[in-house]
Structures are given as C-alpha cells and as structure tokens.
Length: 230
Image (cartoon, rainbow, N blue to C red; front, side, top):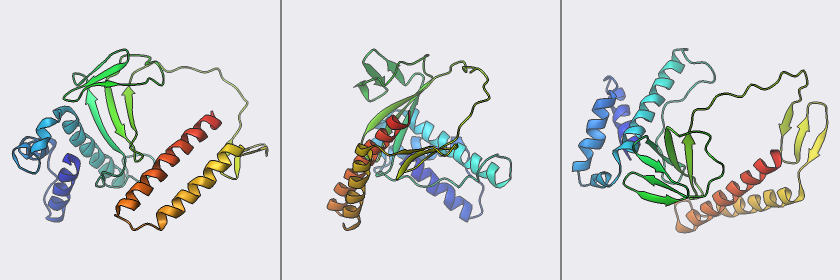
C-alpha cells in the first residue's frame, strides 16, 4: 500500500506539472502521517524497515526510468513504475537490524520467528533478506550476500542452447533433445487448467480459485524445467 499510495501521489504531481517529491517527503506523508489515519493505521503493526525500503525501491525505479529516457542507462528501455496487485508477487525487504538468522528459524522485526527449510547454505553473512510471496501463495526468503567471484579456467569450447517446449533443447551443433514424458504430461495439464480458467468470470471466487491452481501448477512446472535444465 505504501508503494501504491506514493506512486499515485507522484503521478498526480506529474500531471499537475509539479516536481517529483523527494524521499523524505514521501516517508513523512505515506508512513509517518499515514499511520495516524483510519485507513492506514494498520501500518503501525508493520516494521518501518520494509516500509522505508518500499519507498527506496520506488525512488530507484524512477531514477532508472529517467536515466533510461535520457540515454544514460545501458540495456533495454526501462518503463515507469507500475501499481502492484495483491494477486501478483509481493515482497518485503529487511535490512540489518530487522532480521536475525538461526539454525532453523529466521526472526523478522514485528513478525517474529519463522520456521524455514534451507535450500542451500549461506556462503557469507547476509546484508538483507527479502520475503517473497508469489502468485501461487508460496513464501520464500531471498538473502543478499557478498562473495568473491570465482574465476573459471579459459576454454575455446562453447555451445549454444535454445530451450523450447516441443523440443526441450536444441544445441548450436544441431543436436536436439526431446522433452521428457513427465514434462509433456505436465504441460498438457497446464493447458487444461488454463482453458478452465478462461471460462470463469474474472473477479469471481471461482476465478480466483482457478487462478491460484494455475499459478501453483505453473510454479511446479517451472521447478521441473529448472531441474531438467541443470
């Protein structure tokens, strides 16, 4: 809500021909003062760290957009910030002081201890952790750590790989790898679920249930693709 409220305010100022608000003004309006309103008083129950980080991210998104329009940023053109939906991926980032790591639990400010399952061991002490809720209603923790880059030995051998659906992988030398049978079956089921979703009325409870089913199955399919491609 802090992101969306601030973005709406910035867009309104832009349409009125006013300058973009600085970070301190946005923090005052949409964190400090917002907590005193009836609609946003629940923000007091949330740690200030992810709220402030949300505004930092919005500010950085605008900077990237402005630099891109002026040709000061390399790569593809950057689009202006968009409003976030509760149904899409949601994130909250905690910096140092807002989280602690235990063996099987992670403490987050104003949330408490979370029991977690590690996918891998952290190579160094993290500087921040981001809580991610994807569209399939799954939760993940993503840590930022600083490590020394690994220098790989030089080699003259190289190969290009093009990943697809019907043909799982095509190598630059012409070699083709067919998709494994379990993967084909899952793709077929995903199409069936997507077709069922298209027949539902958007915004209805049945549509939302079907959307979550598609999102969860899509997430499982992505995990399967990642396993096959590594």
